[in-house]
Length: 291
Image 1: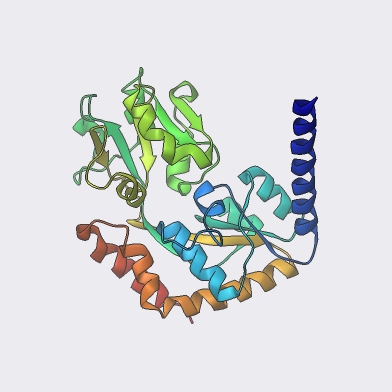
Image 2: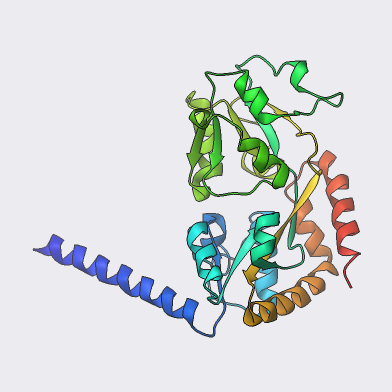
């Protein structure tokens, strides 16, 4: 009887929470979504620096005076909410042509070294035939086709940019292991260590933040030909009058962040020393072009 009552109580709490989210999304108050637990468990909840993605969002919220937590919502649902014109914006998304046709993007809120192609070191190195003169991978799907017994671990719903997305789209589906976005970075190394995956696409800053110079499993990493060295994350909002108003306010706040030394520090604090000059230069160049 007690157990049944507890189960009923939990169900009622979940229902109330879901209804509260629905009311917020349909009301006048802006709601921020993310599919990243690092954001939803820390921003406006823990006053401790954690990562570039978390710290820059916290800086934005402080500037906006926004005090509510980020709601943890699957990306597919967030996009559906925005397509329906609901009062929702999504944090830290890389631009893609398809999304730009559907949604409004803010100025860059954060900057990251472009993802690299990681390979477990127990495999033979990638043949030079698949690399350009700079040692960059020319085609991810060709590389994976040359390792037919291997697998790549990828997040379920994520855009790595137009070129990489198109390349991944040609990979044999039987060689792809999809992991929920919010578990991707916490699980990929376990999958490497357990022999369940041999390749992954990862941001170097995230790898460095989690493991520093001491990777628990030996890996190689390769740059990807045609990729920019740095990508930016943005806030995206519905393509509505209300969404445009939110973007205008968000952009004003972001421009103020650009003038502060701590904005740069929120990026350089999570990089090895040799990578700082390149990222700092990219940030300064991008932020100096805003009006």
